[in-house]
Image (cartoon, rainbow, N blue to C red; front, side):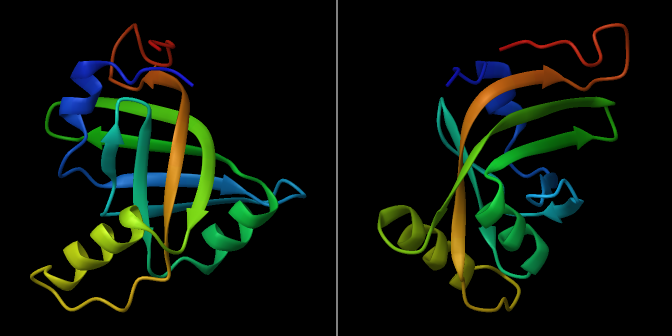
Length: 134
C-alpha cells in the first residue's frame, strides 16, 4: 500500500476513469467509470452498476489498474492495486445514496469496488510518462 500523492488526490475528482481488469486466464477488459472517488490517501473506489465483465474478472483476479486523464491539459495518472468487492456497510450505503441523488436516473447499486493502491504512475504527455511516482 502506498500513499496517493496529494496532487493526484486533488486531480481525481470529476474525472472519467478507465478501469482495466483481467480474467484468471489473462483476458483483458477495460471500461469507463464515472464514479471514481477518493476514499482516503491509500484507497479509491468506484460504483459498479453495469460491468458484468469487470465484476467477473475481479472475482477471478483482484489486480486492477485505473487510468484518469484530463484531455484538455494532457495530464493523467494511473493507479494500480488490489480490488475488494463491497456489498454492504458504510462505503456501500454512502455510495448508494450519492447515486440515488444523482441528476440522472441510474440503476440500483450492486456493489462498490474499493481499491488498495499499491503504485501510482504519471501518465501525462512528456518525458515523465510511465514513471512511477508512488
